[in-house]
Image (cartoon, rainbow, N blue to C red; front, side, top):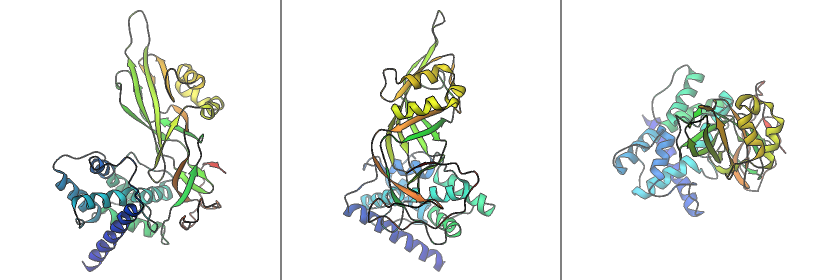
Length: 342
């Protein structure tokens, strides 16, 4: 009981320190507003926003993450929670970064489409044979203490514009299962290492939006789906805009798998460029439009600073004087086939 209380107090101190650092630098988690912040955190913790009053929902998130409710006003608690989950501070990476590092060390991929609960249960089952109960933050710290006893730290990684990522569709898109405005999630198919640090891992997401759907029409006129790519997700949860540009088109031309998986209709759209879209494509054909597993190349539209994890055997060129010390080396893997940018 004493140890549990000490653990809770330590976690609370980290949470409040994280919130203080964010407030001092006038930084807020990307995309978080006072109205949407709780729903965003619930989506991380549970996989979707919850229902009910804000105070009850906030208390539930705190108990599930920390085992107890945090002190302070409603706004202070919500800010502290968002900062702990998404930002981290000079001494502690964000919860998103930590769970991603733990997954990558264990599984050589991340599972960001799953909830925190699912991801931690999966790690516990893999490492310990069964999942444990209790606060999610304490469970993750226990896992990290076994995997990385010297701790985990984040390095600043500078991702230039025009950086190419290969992703795959994780479900088949047809005119019968999507509609205009739907958000589509793809998964990165490779690890991306920049200057010795893992910036994005296999399993990180690429987001796209369905911009047009047309059902099959009379006289043999084909159905249509238009898709526009919007963002790529990094290991620490940061995102940056992506599109189909000159560098990703070059990669598509060199990769026969793009043509093989999707057929000439999709490949032609990718190679020739967007059809009336900013960074997406239009594909025409039968009802089965974009099969699961179809590969696509996108590229970053702008420069982005992200959090990276040092990879064994890779020298790190720090981006600035205030970057964290590198994490301990990890065992090499025969299955690791990263794309490395120097």
